[in-house]
Amino acid sequence: MHKQLTQSKNLNKSKNPSPKTLTHKKVSIFFFYKMVSKTRLIVSDFIVSIIWVWNGALIKMFVFKVLQMGHDSRGEFMRQSLTVGSLFFFAFLAKVTKGASFNPLAVLSSAISGDFSQFLFTIGTRIPAQVIGSITAVRLLIDTFPEIGRGPRLNVDIHKGALTEGLLAFGVVTISLGLARKIPGSFFMKTWISSISKLSLHILGSDLTGGCMNPASVMGWAYARGDHITKEHILVYWLAPIQGALLAAYTFKLLFRPQKQDEKEKLKGKTD
Image 1 (tube, one colour):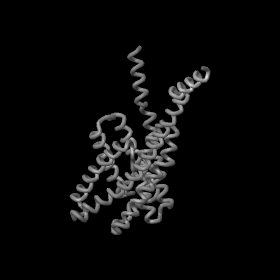
Image 2 (cartoon, helix red, strand yellow; image 1 turned 30 degrees about the vertical axis):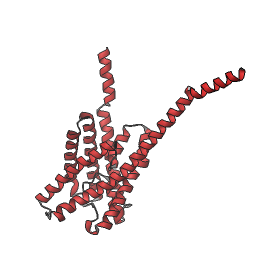
Image 3 (tube, one colour; image 1 turned 135 degrees about the horizontal axis):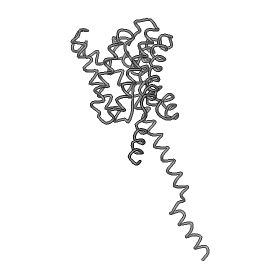
Image 4 (tube, one colour; image 1 turned 90 degrees about the vertical axis):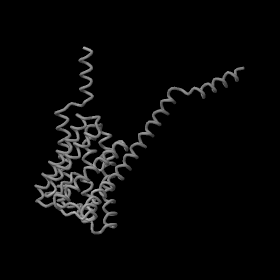
């Protein structure tokens, strides 16, 4: 009789696991899904970075070689129109992949507003994935189309170039953060304003530094030329844009409170 009671107790325990066991299982499942989502995001950054580099090169080839348009206002208008259309495509990709990006400045500005683990994840894995993707894309481009060119170059002195890229990065990050706050739900309107703003800033800086505002893609072309570790490249296309992006993120954080905090204060006011 005693043996039967103990056996029934053991069966009940196996059928009804303890709360600690359930908690451990939930935690392990949570971390597994988190790891899978992070891995998927890194792979998506890598692929999207490759597509972005190829996108810019193929648009130029299509306008100037296939359509045989010159570098006049008509040809430039066609090229910029296709660029705006491609920016809508990349915004759609970011939505589908839940945040994939080809630009280190975009992920860095969002990582600053998050926790420290997210910041380390961005610095340690996402940005390297974008850089490796850009380098891979440029290598494939040069092997496929040797006449494609060698990417953006600095046409002014190093200090003016650094100031230009820093200001452009500050502008594009400020606009992105502002759109995310003021127009959180409208995909078309947000993407349209963002695309036109990025295009305008690119045109402003194109004759000076190339108007890149993307350290990863510039790194791809610089690596192909062999000048990726020069003072000019590191200062103008890495340090200056990153400082501009950080300054924009911190300035925006000081001037505008997070939306969650605003919503909490509104709820408190209603309850009072």
